[in-house]
Length: 255
Ligand SMILES: Nc1ncnc2c1ncn2[C@@H]1O[C@H](COP(=O)(O)OP(=O)(O)O)[C@@H](O)[C@H]1O
Ligand SMILES: NC(=O)c1ccc[n+]([C@@H]2O[C@H](COP(=O)(O)O)[C@@H](O)[C@H]2O)c1
Image 1 (tube, helix red, strand yellow):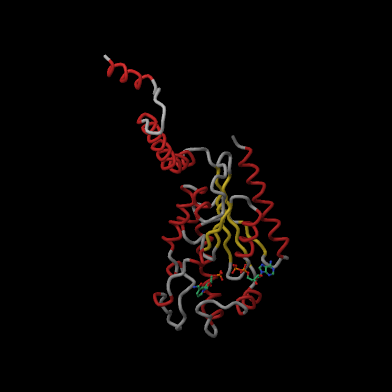
Image 2 (cartoon, protein in one colour):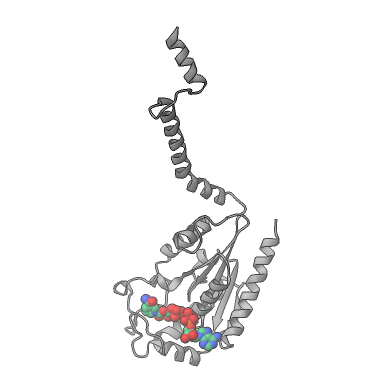
């Protein structure tokens, strides 16, 4: 009879005292197991919630002529806009050894073929899939920051962003910085690329390619806001920021 009574005690709750109690060890192990399971699945549960929530996003394209002020504007917007980040096209140039030379001996850097566009698109898709995680992985957001009612802004900048159809179709807002030939030539001459521009590169290759790329861009898309890159920096930056701020407010007002 005695052993039966001990078994029923354990089933209803342990009454044993002391460190060696097996019931306590089992409970502790179960708790530990549950805690590990919770930790392991927390990130994927949070990701699932984000992917299936009504998260708001905005993709802004900042295009324009070389040295038109794209990076300056993008950096400014990034500093001002909460939960924003930049994907820059000029970080996707192919290695110099695979960029072909044209009939005049100029390296053909100013075409989509000189860029790893599939890689760039992957980065944009990665952001779109889970902007919060994208920012977190790049140290742009606190690990446990709330994801409720957040709006995420992606700034994509580059001289050929509107020429690549799949990318162009993703933009909610498009800006294009333009400056005249002489100013562009002057600004370009003060910048050192890798590799540096060879003699006559601007007149013999860069500017003619800009004219050609711009024509092609205008065939692909018409919804572009053209910006005068000659206006004082503060004026250009403030005007675009205000435009985007209003769009963000409009989106946040939506239920
Ligand atoms: N509105 C502006 N007025 C005068 N200079 C500018 C203006 N915007 C940018 N710049 C200058 O022009 C140069 C090129 O700007 P940057 O933003 O790097 O151009 P991009 O990214 O289009 O090649 C930089 O020296 C920058 O300080
Ligand atoms: N690897 C590089 O970053 C690299 C090399 C050679 C030329 N470029 C020039 O970069 C320009 C585009 O960048 P920006 O719009 O920032 O000037 C193109 O006109 C191209 O000629 C870049």
